[in-house]
Image (tube, rainbow, N blue to C red):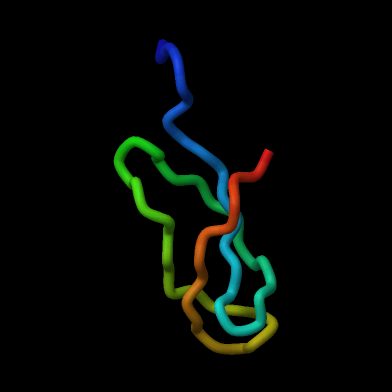
Amino acid sequence: MAKGKKARANVGLICSECKKQNYVTERNKLNTQEALVLQKFCSNCHKKTKHTEKKKLH
C-alpha cells in the first residue's frame, strides 16, 4: 500500500474557447508535473478544441 501523498488526482478539463467544463479525468501528479492540455471534442462548440486542466476537484 502506498503511504503519504496520493499520486493520482481528479481534474476537470475546460474548453479554451467557450470556457465550459466538459470532461473529468485523473492524472498522476508524480509523473506529470505540468498542467494537462488535451485536444478533445467540445459538445458546446461542436468541434475539437484544446482543453486545459482546471484546479483539483474534491
